[in-house]
Amino acid sequence: MTAAKPRPRAAAKPRRAPRAPQRSTTQPASEAAALGVGARLKAVREKAGLSQRELARRAGVTNGTVSLIEQERHAPSLASLHRILSSLPISMAEFFALPVSRSNALFYEAADLAVVTRGSADLRVLGSERRDKRLQLFSERYAPGASTGEEPIVHDGETAAVVVQGSVVLEVEGREQRIGEGGGFQLLGRIPYRLRNAGRRTAIVVCACTPPLL
Image (tube, rainbow, N blue to C red):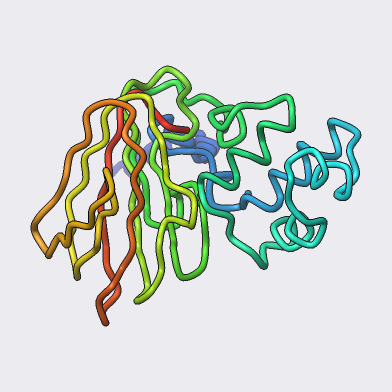
């Protein structure tokens, strides 16, 4: 009996190098969570060659206010921040802008939203990295007694909001209007307004404006 010839072994398939993980273009840059208002303000101030004292003098605020903001120990209202930035060669939109995403579908985790103010009044915004947007959406939380600030917000456009939790008081046109959970408001045109939480529960508000405020 003739011995069976051994079968030739199949050549081993070359192993493919593992693919490097690809970053999705639909995800926003991580800088949105990393850069707070204080870090941004310090960078812009130093780029303009101004000391904290000089910036405070130009903006009409105290030197301590600028220092506390840069240390993330004081959250300025939108009106106060706008006044400070008016003393620098930068707009509010440029101040909050991040590297532009290539995608038109943007997705955010809660930690990815750009922080506008922290503290008892916590305002965060979607789409701060896109300068070409026509609509801007804010996620706002107000602790009991907190407000948008002493100065009213004035926006050259339309503003609409819905109260998701709790209640707020809208101060507009010389009167106060309490808005409960599920209710909302819409302002057409340049109407100064202020929001405050007069209740005992944290108020959550979703607010949209067009054209973008930031």
